[in-house]
Image 1 (tube, rainbow, N blue to C red):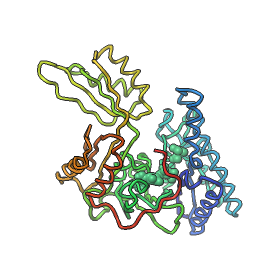
Image 2: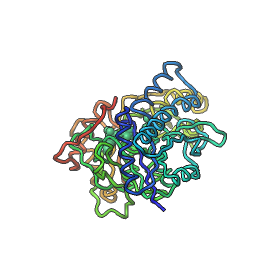
Image 3: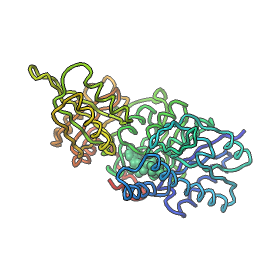
Image 4: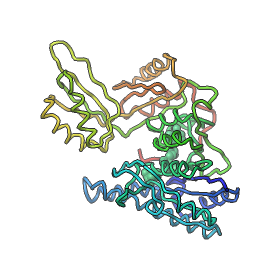
Length: 421
Ligand code: ADP
Ligand code: ASP
Ligand code: MG
């Protein structure tokens, strides 16, 4: 039996018909190497952003079901065009959406998790010698509702398919040549990592390195899927390999720096200092599926008996959160709510920072020397994050990248448009 390779091509890689023809060449190359190939594609270029924009022009609060119906259409275009490009180049191919494949998810709109993937139809097409082109980002529930996996979720579709099909490898083709020490669009002398552990990549993806969707890394780790991030435009380069932490020989204390501009901070002032307060607040948010990232509860000064609780959420969840806070205030009776939406979360990640206490101090000193105020701090075993003012994000990333010696002499070549943010 042939090995199965899953290839995933992101939006920039399929941005126009010439690029789709280029992708067809990369697929044929893999097939001619003797493999069965399953391809996952994203929507063309900025299609998904454009669809979001149209929805917002129609309604301030479009229903999440209809948003999924809308956003899932983007990938429908690119699978059909890529299948046509393959057929035109003489390669038998068939496109399939999530319903046709059976990419089964939980019934949560806009950020559903994959529960199970049916492989029988894909395997029967592969057995006929066809390349199967699958729509990324979308899923379907038991009762045939369309779901999406969250922005950037095509990576997760690809890795989950690779796991389900027991693929030999999952290659994520994108517009940079691999995973870098930081976003090469922000710091041009960022260095490409030959290899990075699942654990470090997962933290980096969670704190804003959007080169991989966090759940893709989680899934790769869980099913031990060998994963590569590589360039669509330089097919001979192998990019970055993502492996188990035990397979890595040596760790620099810091593997990478990331920034995340997608969150805002909410401060709830003067909540009573007694058992159950945080439970009421965060349960109410959790019940509405709002993810809270950092949380800080201040020290209750004597006589006052009240605390301030600050937390961060995604900017997109603000309206819903404010409604919930209004409701919750009937029980908690806090005095005020402040919203700070001009923040950036700056993080350093590295498995080598375990048991090296100097790393956090170096991070704080670097920010201090740059005159950057730290608004919140959170740490895990292999990550330290600081919330700073949004307009200092670039300085913070550059400063930290430099102090931890992550740069190289060459300038990364990046293709495609610059991101809007
Ligand atoms: P695709 O459309 O292929 O899924 P994305 O835009 O989602 O591509 O991800 C690739 C982008 O991720 C790069 O263009 C780069 O700007 C950004 N990026 C952020 N952090 C990193 C990093 N540490 N290494 C590489 N790329 C990064
Ligand atoms: N098209 C979707 C998005 O833009 C999914 C993806 O590209 O991974 O978020
Ligand atoms: Mg992506």
